[in-house]
Amino acid sequence: MSALGRTAHPGAAIARIAMPLRESEAIVLQSYPLGEADRLVSFLSRSIGRVRGVASGARRTKSRFGSTLERLSHVRIWFFEKETRELVRISQTELIESFLDAFRDYASGVGLAIVSEVTEAVLPDREASDANFRLLLLTAQAVKRTGKWEVPLAYFALWTVKLGGWLPPLDACSRCGTVLTASEPAYFSRSSSALVCGKCRKPGLRRIPAPALVAARKMLAERLDRLSDADISNAAARELTEVALDVIERQIDRKLKSRALLEPTA
Ligand SMILES: [Zn+2]
Figure 1 (cartoon, protein in one colour):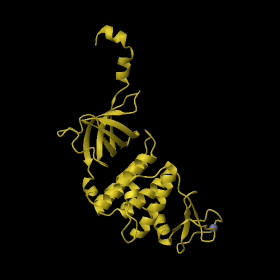
Figure 2 (cartoon, helix red, strand yellow):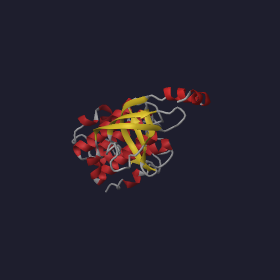
Figure 3 (tube, helix red, strand yellow):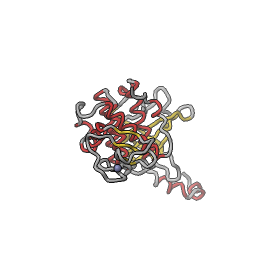
Figure 4 (cartoon, helix red, strand yellow):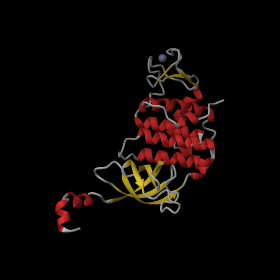
């Protein structure tokens, strides 16, 4: 750059200094075609949280990004931040673990699509959250390893609610304080995200069977990969998923698109 150029654009040199190449572990949340050759990628980086960026040339057949930008790919990513722009420029990626195989099963794919949509929706821009990062990875790995999605999705949804600070007390009625026992159902109010006992129930509340409440307590006390199949039934997991997704939709104030793909329980 000429001396004249520097004088003409005094901010140019400063901007370059403020744009270091960053490196982070990350999980791809969504990726969309952008223009003819690029992709717009939303990812959860371990170091700075949820970020959106452009991967130039990622749609070309021989792209340097290969299949690293598929949904939920666990990657190491290098990117440039631009102070004045929301989007980062993705420079390079390296695959750590792919979850493409888990998406091949339709039902598992729906479960994982919900997981990535929820993460994208609930986490604020650029706020690192190691707990959410680990939850996302643990969930994807459980679906991949077991070929089952019901318990991992319920675990993910419940813990997302807990980490968001939106979990109502599970052990006592929110109106009268009666202890909610392991043998009786509780009732969930969508409008207030609270649990009440059988005596305080009103029409229109969702009934949560006792096994689902027991399952929730187990999930909050144990790591997903340490829960055994015998611990939690698919039916209990589905109940919990529905309730937790209701809480999440209320918080984000909109419906989750991928939730509509969940087939109703028989
Ligand atoms: Zn009550």
